[in-house]
Image 1 (cartoon, rainbow, N blue to C red):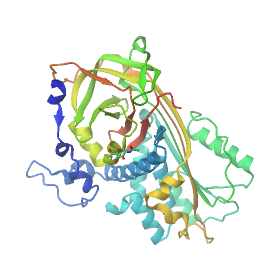
Image 2 (cartoon, rainbow, N blue to C red):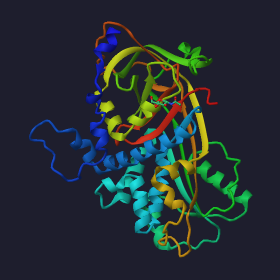
Image 3 (cartoon, protein in one colour):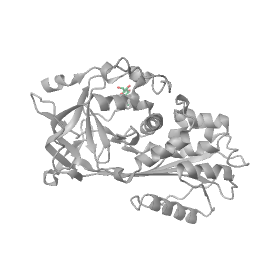
Image 4 (spheres, protein in one colour):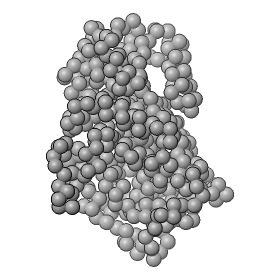
Length: 418
Ligand SMILES: *[C@@H]1O[C@H](CO)[C@@H](O)[C@H](O)[C@H]1NC(C)=O
């Protein structure tokens, strides 16, 4: 226990309460107190950069969406790339009149940003997180009911900022499915399997978000050390899964005594990292951790973790998701988009959101850039070796280090993906 005590910090240090309650509430343009040399948390210079500020806003939407999604399937894995859904919504807001536009803006936390050019900044953010070295693909699309006449004043800014064209359904379920599948294949370079789910009838507006990621660790795992090992599904049930291990892993670590969870961060190539949340006892109830997730909290964690050496084991992972997130969105301030929204900037006809779909693929294995860790990292010397075993339910967050954007979030109750 002594080793853990060394690294124990209080919730206050991690910013529980403080930064959470003020999530995104800082005013843009207020002068940074750089004369004191001790900037207060609310005025972290990181969030002064417009693209980082926007990333924090849509990531907070992402955590909301994740919580809604996770509470609907308490006993199942969740894999979600909320960015693709946020992008579709942000793009859709270009066609929304005031009342409807503010509904979307509130859900995406844009009401807390004073940025006159949100859509221009969004374009910058997308270009940054989907740069080739990130290995992250994300695409979004707005699909409209058949025969809808769309104003060109909506199409032009949509293409300019979001690089996407609206799609109008043909009305033939087989052809529409075929077309959707080939769009996904093109966007994801064939990494996501074709869907067999037909486009339901009665669609007015359908949003589709797709994403794919395959992690490349900064330090690769030795595949000779991968073997079948126990994963505790809960207090009673155990399964055997391929588990990678590194007896001398360098990782960033902290024990959160409020959340009773061990947090670790492993770097990936392309300025990305994965942050793991591992409860101190085996449980499928990860609610406490989920409730604490905000962009500001994750940013604080990223600053506070200490570099250490540990015995690390981590299951290989290959997950797919094809699901509707319609109900989850309705739960997070967006119900009115499904009732009687005002999209008169898109068309003269009364249209409304009817369905939101998410498709994603996510994978990590032993692959990585180098076989030895960065010599620049000096681990804190511990009296006792620390073990970090992801052999029970955990949450992971894939974060872009450059912008702070949340790119993927997963609740892993069973790494076999069942
Ligand atoms: C999960 O944990 C939370 C907080 O610890 C608790 O309030 C809730 O009742 C638990 N849920 C279940 C299903 O046990």
